[in-house]
Amino acid sequence: MKQLTLDIGLTPEPSLDNFVAVGNEAVLNHLRLWTQDGARAPVPTYISGGEGSGKTHLLRAVYLALREHGVAAGWMDAQMRHPPEFDENWRVVILDDVHLFDAEQQHMAFNWFVNALTPVSGDARWVLAAGAVVPMQLQLRDDLRTRLGWGHVYSLQVPDDEARRAVLRQAADARGLFLSDEVMSFMLNRFSRELSSLMQLLDNLDQYAMQTRRAITIPLLKSMLENE
Image (cartoon, rainbow, N blue to C red; front, side, top):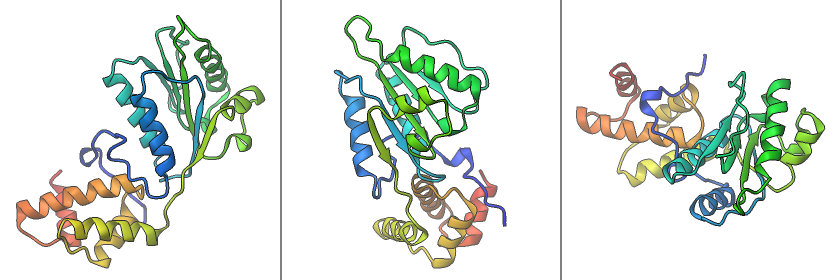
């Protein structure tokens, strides 16, 4: 059966606070410290992870956090067909899904990278990037691939279904909810398997169950989606 993605109406803006860091505490702490530290070291950070690992969540969370603090940042992902030239006002460059970059995107990413590591007015810039594999395994132009591996490199651990179920069960118990195996299977098979998305789905289920005064069941979950 085709897996559905979590409806955008159910998903809040990504943040470092709503990222479920099971097994990935080190990278979360690194990003949290960096976004809170005004004296940023010019050392690139690269995050690898497969589908559902949450790497895009983390990059978007950093981008939004920096924007809230008035820090100008450039964003490029594989969906951006014609990325703009580097902006001298940027203090951060964020590159998502670099393993999917075409020749034009790779050329511009290299340009952004080189410019970002050129200090301006004594203020260091930063590069944050993510891809499906570690830098040395990226099928990219050599100069870009080697630079992506220059600094901090983290590999996100993707929890298996047993771990996802354990996290869901623990979260449900903490809310005083009964979450059956059937409901968990439905959630895992038909929605995004990224833990932060599953946690948000559980939060919405909890609220909807209270509003309708019904137990959490598969029919309730379907009803919630129909009313979104």
